[in-house]
Length: 244
Image (cartoon, rainbow, N blue to C red; front, side, top):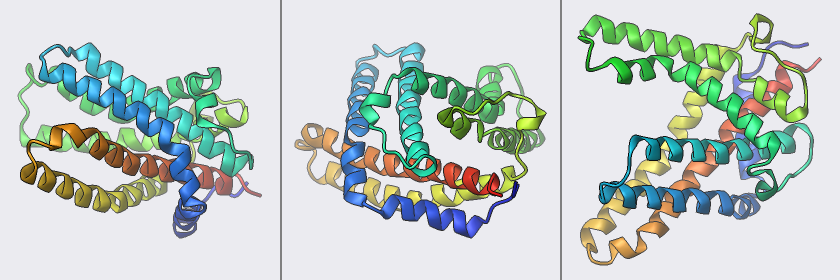
């Protein structure tokens, strides 16, 4: 096994995957984007009416991750198995829910310092040294999660996996760099789109509430394309890492 990856090649392959047949990717992503848009607007309505609770927000987070899991399976299948599953068929499937549970575990590992901070922020005195340590620990837990990230494509392919030392890959830092690069690249269109949205909201205050869901669809489409690229990075890294 190769046990290494090329950052440049992985990044190029991932964006090539995104761009290839781009119009079809937009079409395939429509159900996922609509699901998130509807859920987000319901959540926003509940918040504005002071009906939303912490459970409501957590439920939205979980729902979004379930959608992301189905997207991840579709991307892994297309890249690693050369098959093209349909999102609607994968959404809430047994495999998708299993993927979601593992995705959730890895997310909790990565965000554990942040979660700790929000739980105990009112009872702890946070000086600069503590905040610096928290940031370093967050980077460490993120690296641990990324070292276990190949569990996700293994699950998709039906390969056995365990949460143990042997499952740790050797390229967590490279994966962190790749994820950061992809996130920064997609941050540019996101900021441009947000600026356009705020400008429209200021200029057309009466009309904006009516067409806001359309702006939400555009915003979530950018997020959807970001997710595709992130899962493509995982898939191509997995493919190269285990190549002979």
